[in-house]
Length: 340
Image: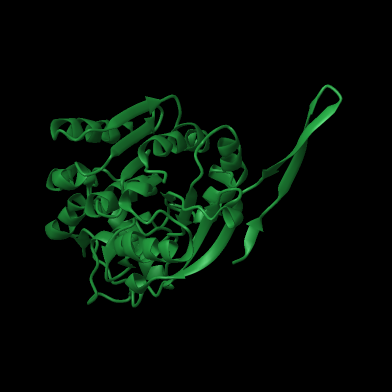
């Protein structure tokens, strides 16, 4: 498994002129691996079932013989996992610092969900493949089989930002037997309205001219990403999806598919599942355009009697995600996951 970065720093501690010991401060290993997903095989978009996955192993992993809890982190729309690794979260250095400051050792796993239309929505359809099972079954099974994990739900946390926060909630509601705690950051798509006719008309024109697939750092393909995830149609090539207007005519059933994939709509159906979690945490910035829907989800969980925590902090959609990952998310899982 290729290592992105693995360095060891040493320091000596002195008392007066007496050398007491030599201390080695080891940096964790950040590995980029390929994991095959049976759940993604045969998707109509033609995306590979061989997925990039980043795995952070704590200092001393190779020699410790210990088993570790695992935190799964799902990245946001429009970029791949590498952007979060190198930019947003600043791995491995930021986690090394957190561990040096007293955080508990853990394995961190970040799968890449960048697909033909820049994001899978962590959903399940014949057009994109079954991303829910890829995360909750294929990936978890692979990590447990190939790393020294504590292979129990009480020692697994699921988390993510933006589209990844949506994926955390969506998958978390459907797989409480796999994960023990959830942390959703600035979750998008909590209440989805189908795009209006004007936007659909412009998209149809763009589709007729040919879509530029795999466009990193752009939201241009967001409508197609959502349609391929939530309104698939294997009988409608070459895009294998439906849009909420066709030839200027409203398609009510397709429109309702957008709404049906809203956590604010389906959360009431998963009360027993959500009650199985050891803890659930939601957060969002006060300058994030998603504050209103995240606050609605907080109210819905309260109404349903689901224990959880919710914080609105000073920030926008992305400017404090990396810091909150270290200062809030990691301590949350340290306190909620079974560590041995």
